[in-house]
Length: 477
Ligand code: C2O
Ligand code: CU
Image (tube, helix red, strand yellow):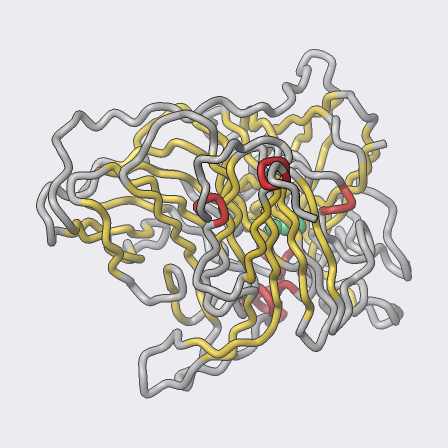
C-alpha cells in the first residue's frame, strides 16, 4: 500500500540508463526537498553497442558503454541525494564499477578482488552511497580497463552543490581518443613500447564522442564547462580561445576562481571552467589543447538565441568543500617512489609467466612499473600483494610522491581527496584533487586525513602504466 507521504519520504526515480543522458535531479519535482531520504536509482547495462565515431565511408565502431551512446549516462544528483546504481553485466568478461573521486564506503568502491567479487557475465551488482561532496565525477570499470575504457566504458556522475553561483548553461565535455583504424574497427590498445613509455595514443581525438563538435551555448551567457579527460593516455592543457575563461574547480573540488592559462590534465583529471559566450548569436569560441607543440582544436562553442543582458565577467567561488583537514604538523611523511620495475632492469619487461591468476587480477601480461619498488603483484604472489602502506585511521599523512622516471604520471587515490601542498619544481596552487599530475623527476607533496577505513587503490591513471605495475593499495585500519 502506498501511503501519500511515502512520496515525500522517499522520492524514487527508476531510470533505465538507456537514453542519451539521465538527468536524475531534473526528473519532475526538482522542487521537492532534497532530504537524506531522497534516492535516485539507475540501471547501467554494460555491453557492446555500435556507434559512429569516424565519418563515412568508415563503418560504425563497436564501443562498450553503459548507455545507448557515449558519452552516457550523465547522472546528476543534488548534494545529499543517495544513489543506487545497478550494474548489469552483459559483457563476456567480469567487470565492476569504480566511482572515481567519490569519498565512499570501501565496499562500494568497485575494485574486483579488493573491495568486491568481480561481477560475472550475466550478473548484477548494486552500489549504493551518498556522495559527501559536490562536483564533477565519473565512473568506469577497474579491470581490463585498457580495453574497456578504451572502447568507451565510462559514465558521468555530477553532484550539484547547494547554493553557490548560477550559470546560464552547464555543459559536460569528455575528451577522449579512440584507437580506430580507417574502417572504424579498434586496433591494439596497448604495446610494450607504449606501455613502457608514455602510453599508446589513440588515432582520433573526440569531444563527447564527436570529432571537433560545435556545441551551442547561450549568447552572452556564462557557461559552466565541466571538462573531463577520460582518455587512457593523453595529457591535455585546455584553453578557451576567444573568450574569458576562469577555472573554478579541480576534480570537482572548488578552487578560488582564476584565469585558465595552464592547467595540464592527465587521464581522469577534471576541471570546471566558466567562460563567457560570444555577445552575438552565430559567433564561436574554441576549446583547444595547447599541450602539444601545435595547439589542437577540440570543440567549438557557438552562441545561440537572444543575447543575455550584459554583466561584468567575474566568476564567483563555489561553496567550500567539506574535506577533512589533515593536521600537517602531526602528519607522518610517507615516501612514494614511482619508477620502472626492477631497479636494474630499467624498461625491460618482467614476465609474469609464473602467475596463473595474473589475468584474474586484472593485470596485463607484463610488468614495466613499480611503486616503492613493488609491482602488483610482487613476483610470485598468487593473491593480493601486501599494501604499499598501512595508515592509522584518524591520523594525518603527507605522501611525498617522487617521480623517478622521465614520463608523466597522473597519480590517483581511491576513497580520498588529496590536499596538494607543494612541488620541488614549480609553484603549486594549493587545491584539492583525487588525481595529481606528477611531472618527470618531480617531487610533489600531498596530504590526507586517514578518516575512511578500507583498502584503497593508489595508482597511475595512464591505464597502461597502471596495469603493468604502477598500482598498489593503501590500507587504512
Ligand atoms: Cu579512475 Cu582506480 O581509478
Ligand atoms: Cu604513469
